[in-house]
Image (cartoon, rainbow, N blue to C red; front, side, top):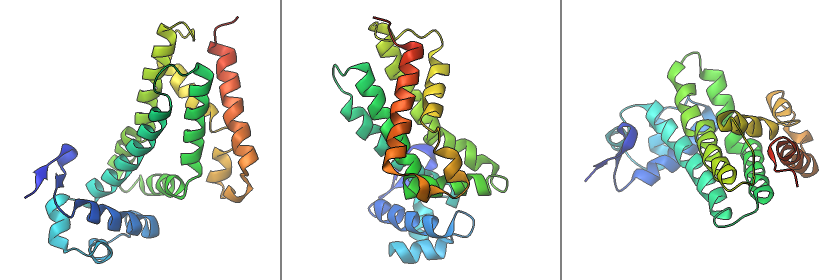
Length: 208
């Protein structure tokens, strides 16, 4: 029996099986070239099963992105539960943002969305909601908590969340865009993390 879920997706017994197969094919072939036949073969299910869960391929692609982004966010938030110092929390957040950028999944999804955005105009906007939009939403929540507790002084929390996410990309994002991922060493990644936190705290931290 299928259960109707959010975003027009139905869940059933082979739901996770379909997602795993689709993830493999999307990462290999991109969005447009990924065929439902290949996804069904990889997942070990029928095309009818896939269509029973996902009315169209775009919903399937976005569900994979949504799940991964939620998993990453939940793991990061589990590390900042309780009374965690603001600098520690920001460092954890920065490390997670950078790690996602450098992951095979993060890089491939970025290329797919940017490369195929013109042919599928809704893809980028919806991916943003599940990825960067979700990160922004959670950053806003946690920054507001630290403002309310007196550990940060921020007038525009929405802007500050965007600034923090962009600071985490310094020295990394352009290298990824231009195919220079092999030049991003662990030391460079950590430099970006610590630099982002230092600059953010210099602007918004409470002066002792």
